[in-house]
Image (cartoon, rainbow, N blue to C red; front, top):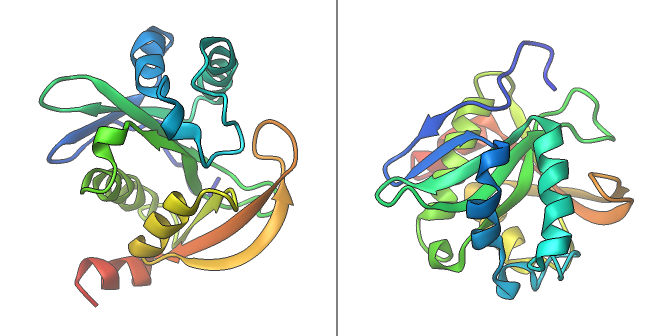
Length: 183
C-alpha cells in the first residue's frame, strides 16, 4: 500500500451506489449477486457462480480486510464487490480490482460510479492506481480504458489463487482529472 496511511475499507457513497466494508453477514447477498454464470464467463474462474466455489472466494475476500460490498442505494441490495490491494510486482502500489457487478449494472453508469468513488479515495493517498485484468476479460479491459487508464505491461502475477497472466493498467491522477473534466 502507499507509504501514507490508507483506509482500504472506507464507506463511500455516490448517487446510486454505496460501498462499505465486506462483512461475514454479506455472504448471502453477495452470493445472490455472483450466482449468474454470465458474470464469470470472461473471468479465469468461470465456475465462480457455483456456491461451493464462491464460498472459498468469499472467504479469501473477507480475509484480505480490503474488500468492499457494492449496494444499490435505492433498494439496499448488494450488487457486487471490489477491493483495494497491492500488486506483488510493485510493493508500494495501490490497486483496484476483484470487481464484479450484476448484469443489470453493466453498460451503464454503475461501473464508472463505482470506480470513480474508489479512484477519488485512492488519489488522496497516491498519484497512480493500478488495475490487473485477465487477458480474456475484454469487457473489463474496455471499461478500464474508458476511465483513462493505459495498458502498461503484461505479467504473470499471483494476485490470489496462483500465478496467472494479467494485463496491467495504470491510471495517473492527472489523467483521471483530465478525463473527468472531459479532456
